[in-house]
Length: 304
Image 1: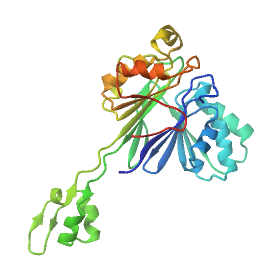
Image 2: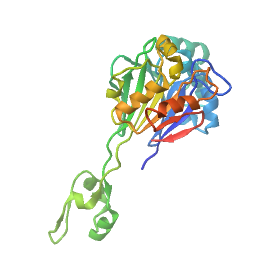
Image 3: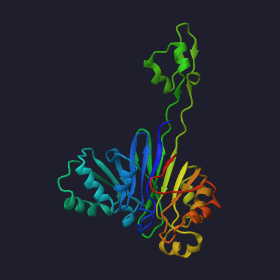
Image 4: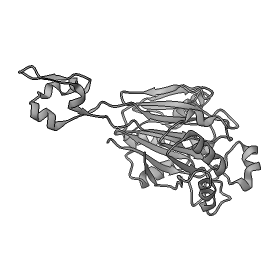
């Protein structure tokens, strides 16, 4: 099975602390790497995680609060100093484009690679990225400004060839892709072997959802049904539910309700308020609703 991993670069909220950095994650899918949010300090965490900067082909910014995007221009500059030549695609709310363009002109004049900006509509769920093996879909969220999450979903792959049958029937290698695509095989004596006897089922397509800053949304789970792994912000515990409502954030209890109602397999918690010195109370609260809840911390790696 091809790798599908989530690397945690930062899981704190707006106030950086010695314990946690601002929001950032790297998603690795089938040898492709994507950065989701780029808070201050992301470059340092990338180095600590031994992630090759040059493998990041796109950045997805959920919204324009500083703890989710202040690190972007610094990383763009570093890419230039490292000699990047491949385009970097940035998917973000359209309001970022003029600011990012001005920053690049001011601080990164003479880049030898192209920064390609893709404006996203945060109020609609739509596919914003697609290749042969993957789609990325926006997840509208309810924050103080335009904000969305991102759903990374593998496309269903082809079935696996049964090597024993290929060898037994002496099927030419040139026919393997045709068999994967649905063909059977007829031997010289006229015996036909249907496609189903020559393959085993494909790996199940996997999915990961990143839900950035958001007020609790009772219907959010409808966009996350059967997702394998969900990251949902859990800035507060229920003892600060009033603050969560005021600042359009969620509690661990609410994040767990979303995970439970969506039927996801695993819930990752993050975006912790700096007021909590010990996040164990956050995960304890979530597990009362959804037992498969886990804290994130910098340099953690989760397999989807």
